Image 1 (cartoon, rainbow, N blue to C red):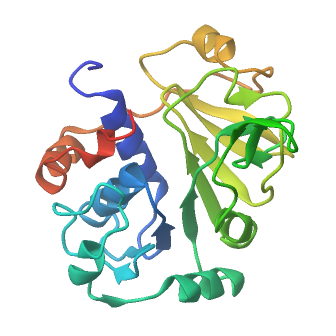
Image 2: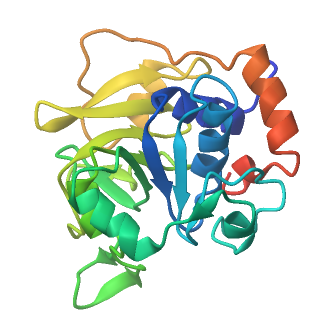
Length: 240
């Protein structure tokens, strides 16, 4: 708990604040935090946001019964209509997908993302799931947002072990900060109120780039109240 909110609350509200009214936004599997953030945005400042998800539901009325994976048929059953995954890829490649939420395991200062292997590719220490849809969506969506619930030097390092995808990365949010990709590199956008620039640097495996230290906005009371109503089972904290 940080003040009257948790880090998962802060991250969810920060993600929601990144979304604009009228945008078309997609989340995939095991994406509970973005799923809740999208629902929060639709119940606050972005009522016309279009919520797309991997099982194919459009604007699910409720996520209270959403499966643990954020990819269950309940999101379709509670949706206004269906929009299949193949159509989402097509939508993105036509330049019509505003935001895609995607994951990764390693990130470097150049915006490269690794979701394939830890260690040597031919003899890896760990074999990861791979790029899946991210190899298509990160380069083609207008804005790709990464969320990661771990921030340490093994996650943010000078050079990733393998480049799964690169390209149209916009922001990465972690329990410590928000990075923005600009000028060909990851730059520090904001640090969260509970941390310090020294801690963020200690947990980052490359030198931080920033012009001044700016702080992430704390969740508002209204946002926290909405979260309690729309996410009573606390899906937003599933990865923490």
